[in-house]
Length: 51
Image (tube, rainbow, N blue to C red; front, side, top):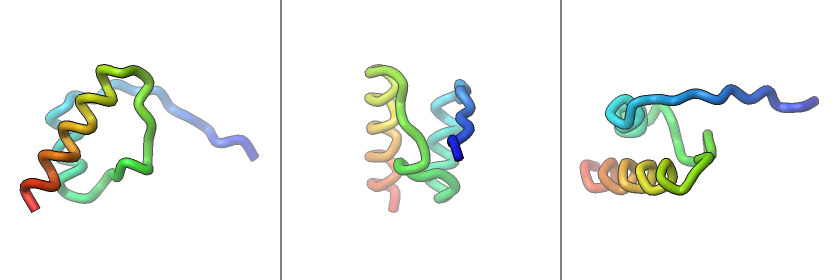
């Protein structure tokens, strides 16, 4: 069965909140461009510093 994918855009502050509260993890999605990947890395690193 093929996985159904949804392509969305989400503000970085909302993604950061989802990460900080454990609602989304790095394994749950993939970045589609380099700028997005850099932003996501920064958000995950910030979340680790907060814990």
